[in-house]
Image (tube, rainbow over all chains, first blue to last red; front, side, top):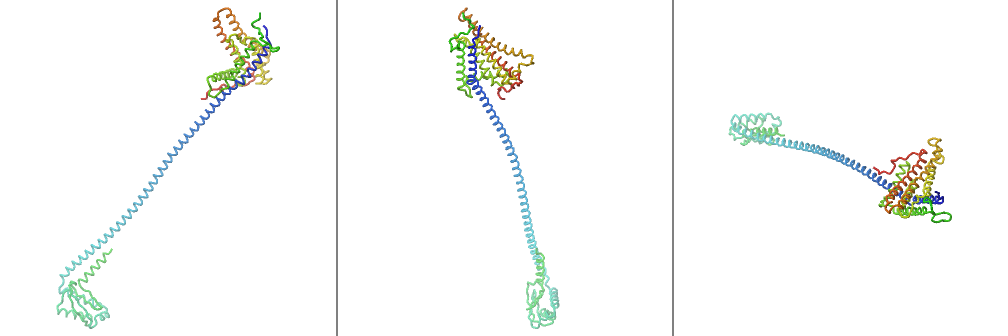
Length: 247
Length: 234
């Protein structure tokens, strides 16, 4: 058994060349393709992981935004509730003020109407009282009453200051003596003397009758008016009552 | 009578005799290289069935290198893978009528063993430098230097003898049985011979990896993390 060294050398070179050729045309391209696929798959996985992370982050952001919406909704509701409460309170306050003003106005009107009604009733009562007094006083017209009225007239004349009494009742000055019923001539003469005495002069006195006086004796002149009758008294009383009942 | 173990020159290129084994080797080279070119011409990210098969072969070679040598497979893939492919195809070339496997001749096996011997030195020096490679003979202690040196020769020789013996014996047995018995009788032996050829190709490649790994890993180079092997990401 021998070894052919030429063949050994050729086969060695053949295998070396085959190693080089297969390295160039088979092992390296296929391994590169495997590595490229692995890198591509890894890149796709990394991208998928990145997108998954982005999706998770976006989901978290959406959750956060939704939570923000809920908080904002709560805040808006709270603000609206507070504003409604404020508006309600303000409206209630205004309504209370309006009601108070209306009540005050109504009270004022009612008081005014009540005052007017009281006044009207008072006036009516006064008139009624005066009417009652007129009817009662009409029944008192007699000699005693007339004497009383005469004495009251004389008293009034004497109460006048002297210059005034002398000026209004100088001699010849025309005066009117008015009574409720016509006087008898004797009474007229007697009254004339008593009045002249009161004046201390002799004025021209003319007697007249006026039923409106009810009872009494009044004296009227150019510069004199002595009201001395039930009518004058009742008129004065009515005026006083009406004056007292003014609101 | 010519010895069946002798390589008969078919013709001469000057002083160089060209034997049948060399011719078959050239044919195998052409087939493998053209096949590689055809395969890699249409590589795509979405592989065809054929591309998937050859990617599986490359991936398997890488996995074997990782498992055996505990290193990244790229620097050793072409050498180990080509040894396996060539020996496998050469062993199975006996299926072609009239073709005798080149590995059944001593020169081819010796060439392969010689390449392994040189490759061990080459990768050892490249990994740890000349000093580092020589230091591997002093492991576990300097007393082992002669034994390690002899071992480096004898293991190369054992590669040669193992491959040559197995393939040559298969060819001889089939030839003898074919000459003695009928046409169909050697078929089981031929199937056994195919199995033996595949196993021997695997053994030769694995032993080459073991020898290279012994030269590069004894430099204290850390074994790669096997978890770095290609695994589908979870």
